[in-house]
Image 1 (tube, helix red, strand yellow):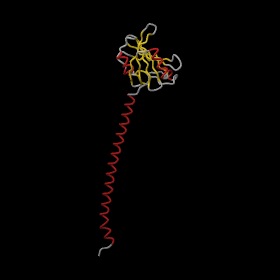
Image 2 (tube, one colour):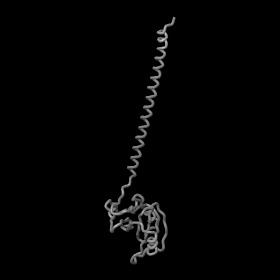
Image 3 (cartoon, one colour):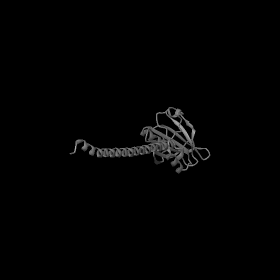
Image 4 (cartoon, helix red, strand yellow):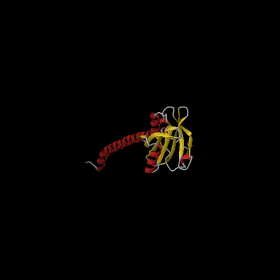
Length: 196
């Protein structure tokens, strides 16, 4: 006759083996899961460090002195020194506020020739049209990433100058004067290098 205790003894070793197998599988799965999570965290960390490093290496520090930019209510655009034509340099010592709501600075090239930038609030459309009619009635147009440029010649006290009126997509207006013999392609490259 089979007794209850015999049944328990017969089933018990099998149940024990099954439970041990389940525990081993759970431990194995848990170990694999830990390895996957660790690998994903390592990839995320390395990706984060890579992005942070790229941002650090590609950051741009504005050459506009804080004491100059704080005195105006508009964005001061300046040429990116890395994008200027060869031989053209932004004169970082030239930044000034000659009057309220204005910034002046220059770019030097060819043995101290200068391109002078006057940065100020954008006037109304009527004021712009009056400016064009008075100063550069004959002009060419050029679209650049920051806005729209009108380029012409201006006779300043018998000294012919190249003049650019650049209205930005923001509230800033740049009036740029350069020697009349400036290479037009180089001037266009200077205009294309402007950034905020």
